[in-house]
Amino acid sequence: MSSLRPFCLTAWLAVPAAALLLVLSPASQSHAQTQAAQATPAPQQSANPAPASPSQTTVAATSPDQRGITARAIDKVKQVAKSAGDIFSRVPCLSPKGGSKAMGSLPHVAGKLVAGQPVVIVAFGSSSTAGFGASSPEFNYPNRLAAQLHRHYPTADITVVNAGVGGEDAPEMMKRLQKEVIDVHPDLVIWQVGTNAVLRNLDPGETAKLVEDGIASIQAAGGTDVVLVDPQYSPAVNQRADSAGKMVKLLGKVAELRHVGIFPRFEVMRDWHEKQSIPVESFVIADGLHMNDWGYACFAQLLGDDIIRSVGQIKLGVNVPGDVRTYRPM
Image 1 (tube, one colour):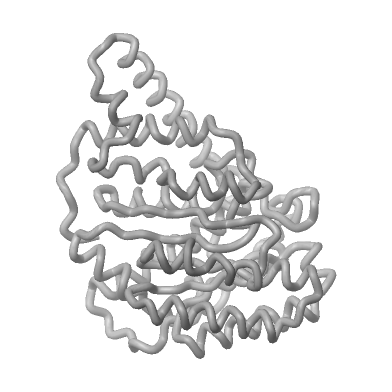
Image 2: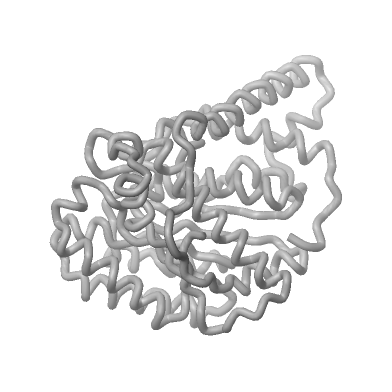
């Protein structure tokens, strides 16, 4: 991201301390706890120097006891970072094989980065956004995505808000769209939707229409890029293959119609199993539905790669048609 702010030691030390607080917090599945998490930036986000957070106040203190706490926090975060990196040591995260569709653009995100302005991303969805199945908040996909973006844009002010609520689909999400998405004024909304509709035997066409209406509302507010994420490839979803197939196709059509991006999670996960020969139990937990740490990590990695590549096209002046923003992982 361009026009980046000077690096400072206080901000750097604030990251480990804030990250430790997040790692030590119990994983939340309830709506109330998810709402509370939204008010707390991801670990890397606390590096923003203003306003000062409790972790920053601790770092700035001069007492030996407080310095000891900070040192232990740094050591713990180093261990966490190592575990995050080690997750791909036995099974690497690879992009899907075969052809790829031309990538579109994320002009609002890119524009903010070029101008050195803060970027806000809202991860909107259900339990696979909230992180059900992950061993800790560290491994839910919004936190993994935030970590990746901060590594790539180390001095940029990026906030990733986790607005995932387990069990919801488009009808419930539409009820909180205004307050939890539009009123936040995000630069990017990553909307994961459709899985629970498939499991409930809801009409894929009705779901697609609600999503289309939701995207139209987001776009009417202005200043926001949108990326849809379709259902996961998992045994529970595959038991309703016809409905899942219709949902995936309809969400793709909605993305094309509204000129937004779509991350094809279903095809990406099917590629893991059918083309990369990764057992399903290596990326899905025992309930046959939700992803595990590896699944969330690889999903976030590939999604982050696409976002970084798309933003890079705009920053480098690549001629991408303004009305084509549907993309596939490279």
